[in-house]
Length: 251
Image (tube, rainbow, N blue to C red; front, side, top):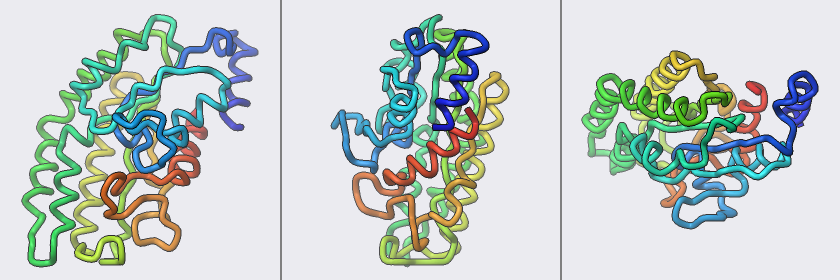
């Protein structure tokens, strides 16, 4: 409802957000496609009608180009997700970067039994965040700007996944120390995404605070634990009360 009110106010002032002309495109990876939220409309990309882009499009009352796809890297965004953008695009949301640094591989390494040391995998991800990710994000953001120069672009960040309190039923082999290291990596990822998005004139939406108290192992988690498909991704509630709430506030 907040989004509708804000955009309606903008429409009254500029005419830009009139629904008959409004063009919205949602780009990104599995955190934007809605992997883990179920109610999938696309089984290959695991796009969900409960994902935050779907919730936003429903609130706006418009059709939209839902291009976010599970497993996507920045190259996939550039090669496969920009077709729905144009000079007439009004709004773009995008969440990308986690797959480029092998974040999922690092998380999987830390799920191994206690004697397994996942620090090398985390170190590899951190090195990629520092050495490779800024350039990859710059290329992706430039591609978006080139295709949709008039659009307002909101870059959606990633949450911290763990509460740092040690193992629980859904992550029985993950120590408090490993959780802290993974949260530190998530913070580094968020900081680079924020820095590069703002350098391109985009609005960064930080979701870490929204997920405080709702991490894996918390009493009311908005993130799946180690469950197979959807592991460490937001639940439907996480998309609505976490991602969508943070995006609505930014809008």
